[in-house]
Image (cartoon, rainbow, N blue to C red; front, side):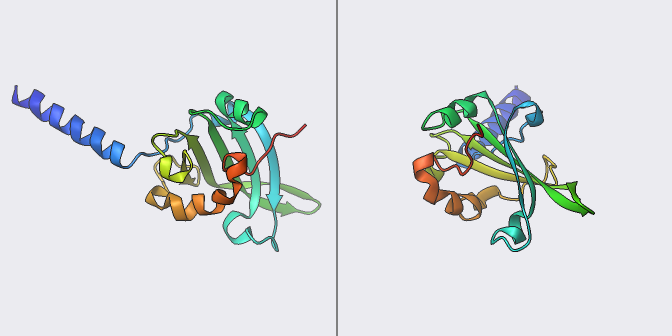
Length: 158
């Protein structure tokens, strides 16, 4: 009986801790999702120091509804897969993964950041959270001017 009571107390404590500090989950198999676009940020770009490299953007089915409409429904997930850009003669190829950035739409859990939760996973490692509680300053501050586009920068390609 004591073990059951202890289990319930631990579960309640864990649940309330998560509710107080909601985390964005690592997206499994995101490369099987819809590919939205790719781009390269090269030296000389104002964001090169933080985001230089090859970017691939992926979206789950719910996020695709947002790209096709004016706002993204709860449950939308957008992935920003950033890889090193390797210049090899006349070609640019993908190098090591730098970060997997995740935007997860949940208007109740992430109310303070426009309904979006943000996280970055260093090197694509699900255990290496690089944003954490700094989502407001590390991510949302840059996304905030994009309010008219539901805080997103990317658009679908034709």
